[in-house]
Length: 108
Image (cartoon, rainbow, N blue to C red; front, top):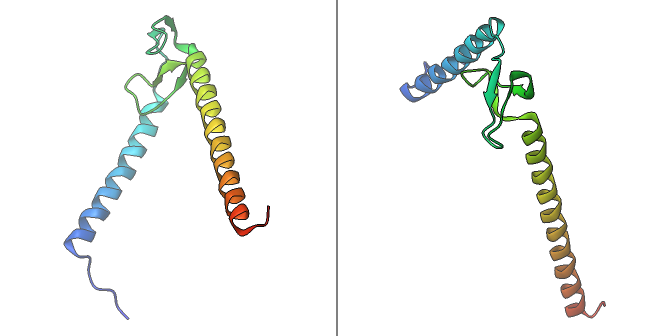
């Protein structure tokens, strides 16, 4: 069975996807000629630091993240702590719901 040609909507989606692939390729090529800036201000702590204090990010114009490595590490630690708290909170609520159901059934 032979496939019919793409509909206009499918063709637009395909062209958009191919454009994304072209952009990724272009970013990779740009990163070959990239040079680390000497100084940069951290968006979080507002200190002017060496370019080596920032992680790489090829999607930004200067090729570095907005936050310094220390601030990124603290941000990740806080997010993980918050996630652990909410996971524990969810487990606690689930335990309470199960216990309520068991009490209702007379199993507890």
